[in-house]
Image (cartoon, rainbow, N blue to C red; front, side):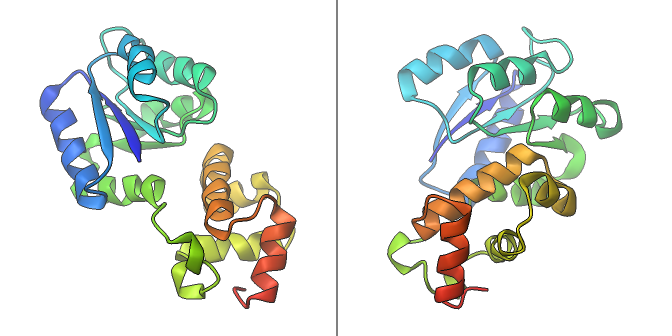
Length: 194
């Protein structure tokens, strides 16, 4: 798993990297101090599995960094980790394309929980038909798919962005080794995963 942590404060970057390593010690983490460093890092290391982004960087203003990353890397989840109060920026960041917004003041436990959502990609694909190998969220998604819910409906019910729903579904399909919603539902029904 490849993760970019973009924050201009070295101590904050180190703290985020430490939290990431708690969840996945083998993750490849690239630390960057400005938005302009992302494109060269992609050239050098490849497209990341997700980007942890501070809003207040020397080369961004407001949510411009989120907007720019979403345009350049539409499939890459963006986790905004900011000192700015959520009531001031959460909605703007989500509209610009962020998948989630966490205040730095939330604390290590809460931040780790959110990061874990984006890093939950560790199951052995050979044993996916065992219900205990699926996360609680993945079982929940299977039920929602089986009920014919759209990404928008799922996002509303789970109170997450539609882009985050797509990320969760992509991981679920990968884990089940299927390519569509109908294949996932069929597999879930035939293997007793619902």
